Image (cartoon, rainbow, N blue to C red; front, side, top):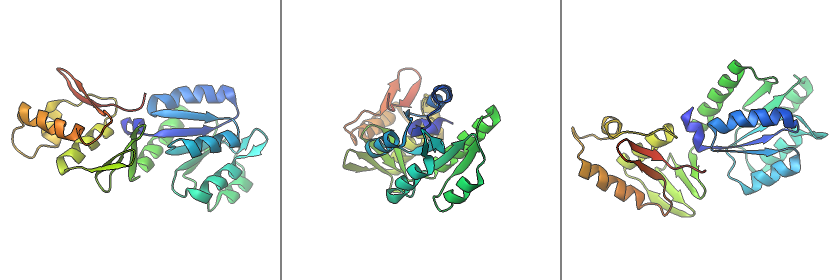
Length: 224
């Protein structure tokens, strides 16, 4: 589930007790979790933050969660949205047709249900083109480009493979041996070659995103 650490989630849920527990779990997996208890606050987060995926209840503070989803869909057809409800309401399900809902989940979430949901989210987000790394820094998987604010840097084949290796293992230290095995086409990779490679890659962004863990390897610097 390491790849989820590259994404930010918005939860629209007015049950504070449930939300508190759920958020503690979500924060283990995601870079950031934003919590709104009403539609107005949820729309504010969607408009001001780089939200990658949304989980929304249906009945929120005497409001209809589908109204929020419809408003989001007016300008964003792609962000994955999951409905989380305590009731299997066929009328709501029928109304959700055409809103491109990723999944309709029922409370309570068992351990197995949660694992399945996390796997579903990981699969869906893995298919997305743009990957959030940290504030003002993202990676376009399709174009192999690193975007810092509005500056775009084209990555070489090795640079893209290395960055994608770090993204797939967010929070994990990648050793030089793993880099040799997964990226380097040559039979051997010298320390000088690796040092030069990292120097060139780091120069492609004004934001530090690669951390050297001396004696162990390298890891991605994501949002705190």
